[in-house]
Length: 291
Image 1 (cartoon, rainbow, N blue to C red):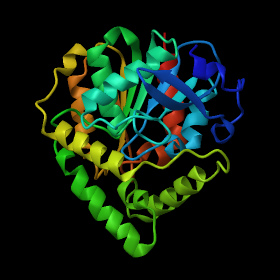
Image 2: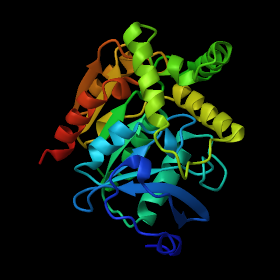
Image 3: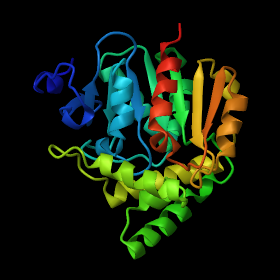
């Protein structure tokens, strides 16, 4: 335990993510903001968040669902939200920072859940330090050099403008389909994000957001990684109509990973795991609980 953790009030088994205390861990000159909930037995699950995401952007139904049986750690990477430092402009540097954070908490083995950009970071962690990772859940994401990933910047800018023009949150367009089911799921998801009413995280800064966009663009232009080197069990999940990271990238991931299974949710986009959170949590718990 580091000094900053000792100065943070302990909160044993909080009942819900919306009530989980903010904490700080210090490592390599960075103060990492994080939240920690769930039972203190077994392998912890570290959540790696999406583009522009901070602690407050995780769906509480997903966090609480997995934390019912596993310790869950969410955190802001370097330069994001309440974490200090300068945001890296490559996925590999983000993975390096995530490894530093994980080790600062004293963990020598973790499970990873990476959503979107977080799934890219998770792949890099598993390749860089395979002994650190027991299992991975990769959602709404794709491999280095994946088809269409280089277009995330253009889509993000376009849908942000659409959202401004219609007085909506950009995630309504980026994460969900434009069907009646998709629109309704988007509204419900955004309402859940507002359940936390105190001790909110800081929003991402424009500078950090632009650095993340650059990192994702570079990831999309990279030569493909040798994913056969990732021997851990991997659950890959996405919606059938992901515009941000086109869904066939999920199928490509699952095909190239030696020990993987693929779940595709119907009438769902990039945020398919949030739209179908009940089914996703059940599948994730089953996957994480296997011997």
